[in-house]
Image (tube, rainbow, N blue to C red; front, side, top):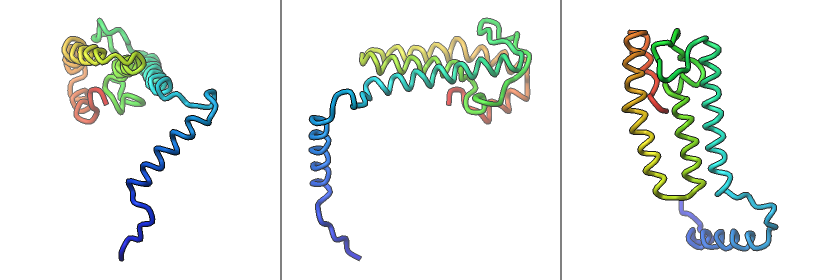
Length: 151
């Protein structure tokens, strides 16, 4: 079976680019969706939502959210957002930073994101996980095997 190409794909591509340009020139500004604003706001909103849900789940389980004293945790929360990430509150913060990085458009902001990941993994999450493994033993080890640290 042979393809009966009417218009070459490269020409279709160029026509579509031309159509986008023409529409951009004709559509009123109030109607245009500014992805430069929408994307970072969406990522930021997702971060806030995940963070709030994570805190709410800890509160509902009557366990501590104090990052300075993970030993105060009374129960291992593994449901809800904790089925997808062992650290949804830290993931939420990362998403908020990512939204800011995109919003500000400053390439050096990437250094801040990398620093945040390095610092949180090394000085917050690793010690917390050691404490959680000591406190919850096999249950936490099984949880670590089935749920990723971030996503």
